Length: 186
Image (cartoon, rainbow, N blue to C red):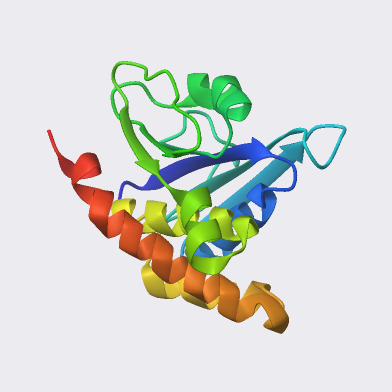
């Protein structure tokens, strides 16, 4: 992993974007990394544009905000459109929910994950799509360890929802393994 990894997660309010950013931040912390995390959402908490930004480093960072994202995790077309310009050209990875088909930009690697479909079909809970897509991203990129992500969920998620989220993590890891060749080719 490069000394600093910058990640933007985006979608609309109610998709669990801020929670997914918190999970990623805690997982990086659990891996012994320095972490900075910010988030924002539109005036309408549910349905408005939403994003979480996470900066992960092996040492203290001077500027704790995303400058150019190494990875964009997008769960909604409008949010993708808003944040795609902040991804590193030539190096960036875009991991998106297959519910939408982003217009691909040259110089970026794109991987679609059926996160919402898997959450509905395998868990009967569409809300778990955020954990599935985050876990797939972790599996494909190694931005944090699998163990650290699972422990973050155990630390953050209330007990009544913990098993659902741990099942979602395993689904995401499986989907990420199936798609990881798209990240590592060429």
